[in-house]
Length: 239
View 1: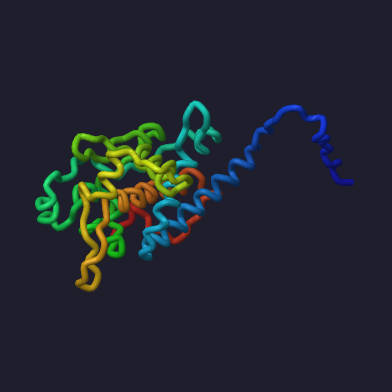
View 2 (view 1 turned 30 degrees about the horizontal axis):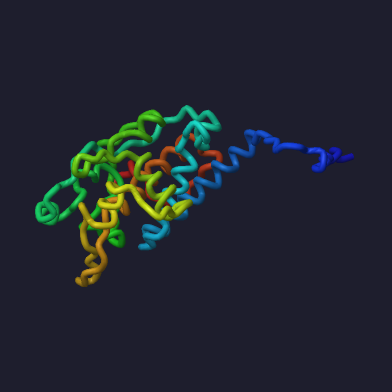
């Protein structure tokens, strides 16, 4: 005989009760978020930059912990290391200087993404030369770059997009330093596709997928049974 179903009389419930999710529940959530992240990264590599918002949302679900909520990796008490391929750099303050460098974020290109004047459609995954494995909190709060004295971390970029700019919510107002970076082009480039100039692209549109690749590599390494290969290149492969 099967197990007897649980009977709940909702009329007798006077306040909301919460039932903890099981270990299997959380593992299934991790599997799904990993799958969502991989699919978005694959679509981005095909030129769909709209998927960047979904990358930010998946990263927020995985990592972001506050007094009121816990990231999924914290809920499963994951003691894992995350791949870090990003050196600490300051972006050029002079736009002409940036253009003359030919590759706006060349110094950021320690690992996986070559960003040629902002062209998402011309991404190239390159071998990781300066990569290391760091703790989860260190990775989440590491310095990615500074722009006009403002420090940007994965946490800051992910939360700006996921919480306020299209990931999970759209606020009427954005943080000024994020808006200046992404909207007004304090640092940025132009799309050049088939010799034609297209819309401008800021560094956020490249950095978010970059760190998304780091997370995919890390989850595959730590949870191979539920995080399979989805066709994304290995950042440590030889070319």
